[in-house]
Image 1 (cartoon, rainbow, N blue to C red):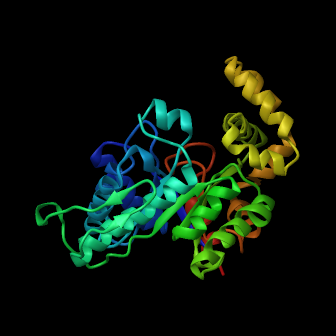
Image 2 (cartoon, rainbow, N blue to C red; image 1 turned 60 degrees about the horizontal axis):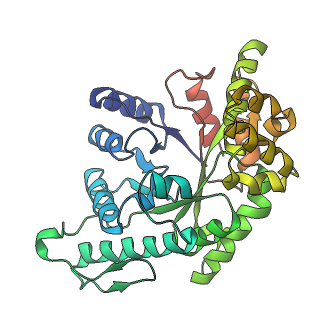
Length: 339
C-alpha cells in the first residue's frame, strides 16, 4: 500500500518547499484538487523540485476542458515530471458543469468514457505522429499539423484515473481507466460490495479485472492525543460528511447504509441554509462507518487493517501542514509501508 498526501495551492516558493519536505519524509505521491484553484499549476512547481514523488490530480474536471486541452496539459506535466504524472479526472455534477463551466453534461458516464478514449487517441498522435482518426459519440479528433504536436516523450504512458461513487461511474472507470479515485465518503463495506464489483464488471469488457486498476482514496480520520482534540476533529469530519451526504450524488452510499431518509433531511437543511442543524443530524454511527478513529500512533495500522485488499493508495483527508490534530507523519508512513 502507498501513502500519499493532498497538496493545496500555494505560492511557487512555498509549493516547492512543501513538495521537497513530503519527498524527504517518504510519501509516495501528492494529489492536487480543483476547487478555488487550478489543479495543474501546483504540480508543475512540485515537479521542478522533486525527483521521486508521484504527482497527480484528484481531480481535474474533465468537462471543463476539451479533450485536446486536457491531453496537451497532461503531456506537458508528464514531460516536466519525467514520467511521474497521474491524470485524475472527474465529471463534477450537472449544476456546476452546466452553470459554472458552461459545458454539456448529459450522459456523464458515457461522455467521460468517450472523453478518455479521445484523450488517449490524441496522446497516440503526439507520441507516434499517427494520423488523427478518432470519432466517438461525443468527441472527435480528426485534425492536427506539426505546429500543434508537442512530439514524443520518454515516458508516454500516463495513468488515467476516474473518480466516482455510483456503480455506473465505477463501471466506466473499469472499462477505460487505469485507476479509480474513491470518494472519501465511503465505507469499507461499500468498497467491497459495490465499488469493486462494479469496477470489475467494467474491466472485464477489456479482458481485465479490478485488480488491474489502482484504487486511491483520501480517508477521513478522527484522532488526537486528548479527548478534546478528538472531539474537535470529529466535529470537522462531521461537518464535511454532512455536506457530502446532503448531495444526491453520494446517495448510493447512504442507501447502502440504510440511511436514505438522512440524505433527504440533509438536502432540505442545505437548501434552507441551516448548516449547524445539518451537522447535528449526522449520527455517530455514520462517522464510525466512514472514518478511521484512534490515537495518532494507531492510525497507520488501523488504515492498513481496514483497507488492505480494498485500496492500493491512501492519504489522510487533510493536507500535511498542521491541519487537524495529526502531526505524526513519519510514523504513519512507516505503518502504511509495513508488510
